[in-house]
Amino acid sequence: MQTEQEPSEQPPAPPMRPARPAPRPAPRSGGLSLGKLAFAAIALVIGAWFLGNKKPAPADSEATATAVESETPPATPPAAKRGAMVIQGEKATTLTAPDEARMVVQEQGSVLRIEGSVGANFATDLRAALEANPSLQRIDITSGGGYAGPGLEAARMIRRRNLVVRVQSQCASMCVALWAAGAQRQMEPDAWIGLHDWDARCDLRPSPDREECNYQVQFATDHDSSYDAWLREAGFNHYLLDLQTKTASKDIAVLTAPQLWENGVDFSVVNHEGARMTRAEVQGYLAEKFDRR
Image 1: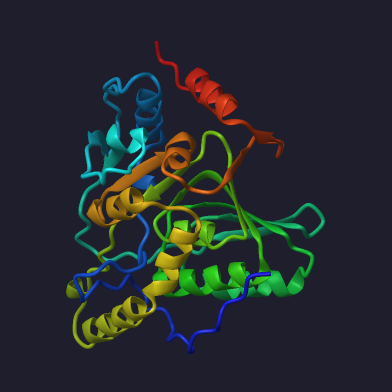
Image 2 (image 1 turned 90 degrees about the vertical axis):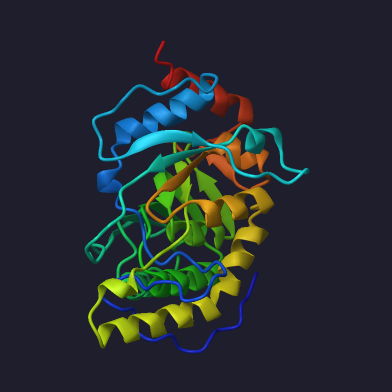
């Protein structure tokens, strides 16, 4: 069993996302609003990648999809050299707090289904679910991310309990820490992981909330080593870590199962019934699902 030293008590999460005061990367502090990223646009982007990097058709969405080529180290696998698919969003000008995720225990207490954002009460709700269900073994999650403080605390709970984390549909921003911290990582064949840099926009808050926001960010920055360690232990290579820091906070870099495999990430793909799929089966499934010809 993997164990981890318990960090000092973390201050309460602020009612908004903190901003990074230092130039070095910090853990995700806020999730991109998936409501503004139409699923049609995402599906077209993923489909285009599997059909030979065809240009996706326009979608009626507040976001647009483009292929972005990132600088790649010599040892980066071929998929990385083809470039990452990035969904471009719009920079937020107002502060919004993420909604709380919905958590439901399933399969006789062995699975916790989580849908929604990593809100201020996320870690508290997860702790309550774990305490009430000692036989819980797996978390099935769909989330666009959220606050860093509750997210990191929740990730430490997942690590201590050696839980399996399975992505259903999507897992972006702070959600990636929850997935990476799992004892085993799984995702369904048409699910995707989303990476981006972070910006909690403390400057949009009036004083003294602005100062409190900056304090919260500094705390999260000081504890970002666990986040980076989880990603590295999960097999995230230099290309993926670099992609994460180079993707603007308003955008999201979409990574599918084949791309993650080709970049060394350690995980398995299971179908909607839970049966493990081979890489060839995943490629065939996605090619068939997203074939627009």
